[in-house]
Amino acid sequence: MAPRTVALCGAGMISGAHLLAANRIGRSVVAVASRTTANAQERAALVGARVVGYSDLPAGADIVVVSTPPARHLDDARHALEHGAAVLLEKPLTCTLTEADELCALRPGPRLLYAENLAFAPIVREFVRRTVTMGPIRHFELRTIQSAPTWGDFLTPEWGGGVLFDLGVHPLAIAVLVARATGNGDVERVSARLSGAETDTYAEVDLEFASGLHARVVASWEGPEAGIWDAQVSSSTSVVRLELRPHLTLEVDGDDVGFRGSDWKVPLIDDFGYAEQMSSLDTGLDSGRASNMDVEFGRWILEIVCASYVSAAHDAEWVPVPSGCDRSRTPWQLWRDR
Image (cartoon, rainbow, N blue to C red; front, side):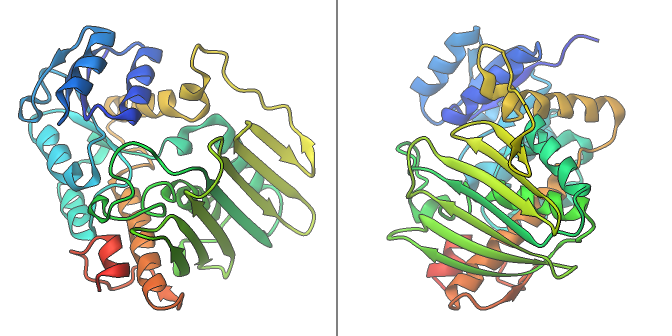
């Protein structure tokens, strides 16, 4: 069977990572659609693809990578699925829980992969594996801190939410993966504090899991450009520390375990899981089995996010997950426009 072909729905910055991932695993990008014609033309010119309209997708492609603004995710993903393509859907899954429910109701199975790329990063997988053997966890903290994006509409209420809605889903996903792998169950309730002028640019979330384990997540657009992305888990006998930015490092009890990143021309595509993510979609389509990064996982992360915005609207009170909030409202609306 010939390698599957790819179309890009959205031509913003993150689409460049998906284009490189397709190149890395030998997949051709055959079409590009964007609300900005110049962006579509620039991306298409890199690989000899056609520029098409959103309604033309999948334009003959087997896989559509949806990286449009969150408010478009449901419609763009549904359109691609209904026209016979598989979908790699960028985070956050959708803008509201109602939209997430509609997407789940389509029962896409292996034909939709939620794009939590760090779940496919080799160093993150090794980090999770190391936590499984360290004994009961006593301390768990994860941070994604960097400067605010200077492109797109991330800092506007129309995006749906701020730093927790966008950047914060990465540490939340890793926290969920570690807790599940170590037998601590799922998130049962959250307490969150958000701050920012127009939307949230700083977020602190305390997660409580079924076992009683607590994890602290910090997401910020008020940090250095180089970024600080790290996680630390400790038990009574061991400490495991992961660093993704500014350097790729994995330490156990203070000793570097010697994890080395990719030597491909753009290491981030391997190191941050983008290539393996796209390969995983192929694998699921071949086997008929959905990845653990499926539509239900994406909805669960959005449930945690929405509960956190509800908590922040009520002075960090503890809120259950799911929160019972108005599922038609965006996270920003749950916080600021209640």
